[in-house]
Image (cartoon, helix red, strand yellow):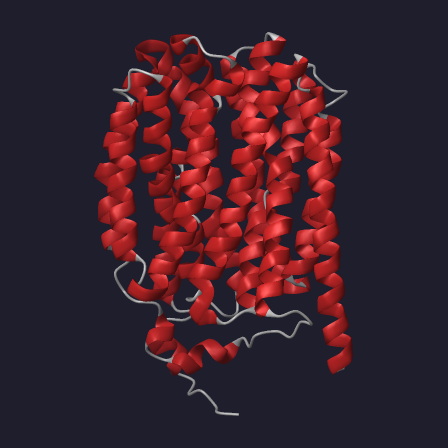
Length: 410
């Protein structure tokens, strides 16, 4: 086995001061760009009222956003494996800002849907899977923590933007709010992306990445990929119900948009704590076990939404839900990096996270459809719980395969 010189990782930037600085810039970039996935949730009631459509149709801009977000994770993830991070991210940042500006001018629900899917969804994808994959190349010792910190930007965005947006919307409407967001994205994200032009260290010193070898598992890379796709899709079908419809749910219960937006912010702020905590836990016990714990707690917390619909109760349940599910999605990226080749990280992480986003997209639409069909969100919560059980079955199989291989080697 070839020994890597002690200064190799340092010269390549792995676990270095630059790596942590880059992580900080990445977190800020993700916090700003993450507005692309949350803004449409806040404006959903206003858009529905302006265009006079039902709840399922009003959910289509969100679904289109998630489809574009999903496709962008796979396509941009593949691009960063070839080109590095900053060039694809720069193009995506420009698309994100333009999407908000065009959506603010749309004269139909179709126009909003197209802007959300083709520009906003694709544009904000660069700050999720591709960014997580890029960050993972810069860390060996604290990869779990680094990945979850980078992934937390999306949840910090969900905690910050939905809190600010209702106040701007109250005075100026959702269109003006969207235009302001577009200008902010263009003015801040482009300079931040330009600070991330250094290539990932595996391009220069391949041996440095071998400080954390690929772990054995009794699954081929394709089989592992399929299993992670199933697990990711199932968990996010479940996760989408509270995250997408909590504002509308509060409106139906008579609590208003502001309370719903506050619950979403609390949910996502708790998710940040959960994500970073899961990173520490994954570095200690492994990402597969951490994923199983998070998924089981998410399933349990979904049950609480059904009997507890009082205002104070919903705040508490939303807090519990955020603390339960926040660390789930980043664990998929850590598992990819632990069990698959580093040179395929962008594409592999992108595909798995694409599945999670498709789950959010379909789950968000399906919950609206079930509401229109039944006149209640109770059945939608039960639908989410069912998908969560599918997710748990896939994770249990993954853990069995990992433990079986480890036992065979021992």
